[in-house]
Picture 1 (cartoon, chains in turn blue, yellow):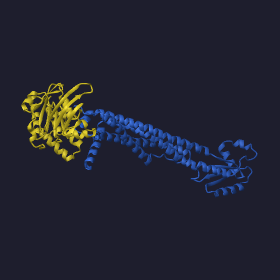
Picture 2 (tube, helix red, strand yellow):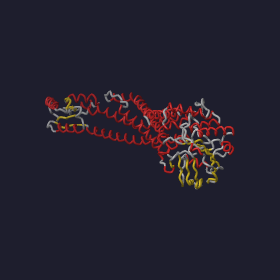
Picture 3 (cartoon, each protein chain N blue to C red):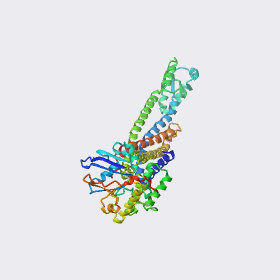
Picture 4 (cartoon, chains in turn yellow, green):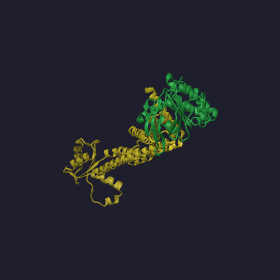
Length: 307
Length: 234
């Protein structure tokens, strides 16, 4: 068959499928809604993980370390140690919090002012506040930096919250797996919905299929419009899923901004990226086509013309 | 064109519809298949159109044995046979043009060609100008003629018809049969199953009579094989 006729036949099948979907707007919209929601759910979860990762990317870069020096060590010595620490390549910034400043701050924020007045001497040591460089803030990097400071004879204790970084990363890993599980389950749901919708349409058009086969229509010819219908369901579902995601981002953004502000961040919620959209549309089209193919393959065989 | 050699057909429910049926139809012949209902007329047509396969014996149509034909070759085979039904089997939601065009569309004909041939076929059955109407807007006789236009539009060498006049009054019946005779005159092989004896007498064509799945009489083959096979002019 020449390519122009081949193209014409496919265009006819595509237009025919579009026309049929348009003629049953309510049924079409309901089906699209189910597919759209099934696609949007794992995508939303994925978006949540991406956002959580990006938002806390700021946190883990701001992971800091408090190096408590032995009490009684003079401030001048602390300044000198801070200068040494700044030489390390993985250290971004070192601030010396002198014992007196620390006490003043504690008095101001803790509400224990009166209790502190009862103390004869300042119980707080001098502290080096160390910020690791970006790119040197993985759990392992932080631990090696901690051991470096802990080896100094002037150091009493190094306090570092690597624990929560590890835990948080583990939570993200669980969520990422959850996205995968949800995607597989809901993908199977999309297959079932498309397959069933196509099955009903095949049964509805039984007479037409019989006549088409009778005048010499091949299985491929009869199947083609149903495959296009499945493909269109996939595309329509992906469009709807995108709309759902964008709307959700729009609704959530103000409250997320408020939350971020409380943490001193100006983080704005990220909408679906090109990659997420590609996955939505690619997945939607593949599932729609496959669902239609399975259904058409199963049901078209059984329809043979009877005289 | 059609050759049945000791053909028997038993349906899955156990009913034996044909028993050792043998006959031949020459290219370009017009033949009536008659007999009471249940005599096996429809089964013969189903075997010719490859809607059924013989249980025993050999059915050869257009040089091909239907028993051995693989499923993927069936569509190409059916495009060589135009079929007309008593209930015409038109698609109710498609206009006349689309109904008649269907055999050309499935065969992948170019759009221009489809347009030309559909008009020619409608012209032959006297329905030119009704392309945009739905089957339900036409009279029963007109619907039957749309079915005939669909059967001949792709110029098949063989046309089979199952009780094509079953729902028509005598005048319309005769008109439809004359249409078939015109196709036969230009070289198309025509096999018509009917129980209308008037028509069979009027057209004076060969008659194969079936009774209880066996051939009662089958007349003489017309000497049409001396005529050259002419493709119908449209």
